[in-house]
Length: 281
Image (cartoon, rainbow, N blue to C red; front, side):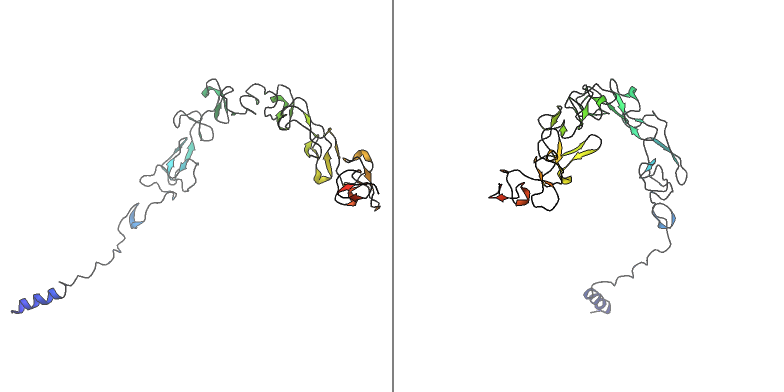
């Protein structure tokens, strides 16, 4: 075997020619995306780069330049950073919408954009569309633009109602502002009725209330009385119709009469709870 053939066989056994050293990394700082030095462009850096229509130096949306694109109702210059100003109110923006004074793309800025309806808070509404919208207090009634609401419909003031009374959030048959009366009782909405006995009245009159938590309860006849166990001065104050001091501690409270259910003696005017019922001694 010749020397050349022997060397060839040896190289083949070793897996071929040895690989060359890898190229060293490029440290020359060649240009990359967005400029020299390999630095990538960044939205919000205040520099108008390729693909951006504005860059106001921040990443806040809705300020005229959102995600480095000019908002529909703004114009932005090519300065670094971009300066953006709202378009004039009434200019067209998206679809059939127009710009308002705040640079927002809205449905309307006055009634002229709403056909037979009206413009409320930059949105069109109508009093005959079977939808509660605009400033209506109920569907197609109430507010400043539509007709009055019938009894039982939602209201904010008497001016929303044909009855001229708005109580407990509904158009009511009466003012219904006395203790333990309400106009929103289920099944009776729109009619002023007494609240059930032993129930609360969270608000009536000038910020008053009749709450068990405060030792008060409704009588069922339109009165707010002292609840059982509450302190009292006479029988007329009590839901139980009995004010007494059965345990003799010097404090009068509203107590139960004979024949009423009880769990302890102190509940009873007789100070005698027998077999779960107030009884005579």
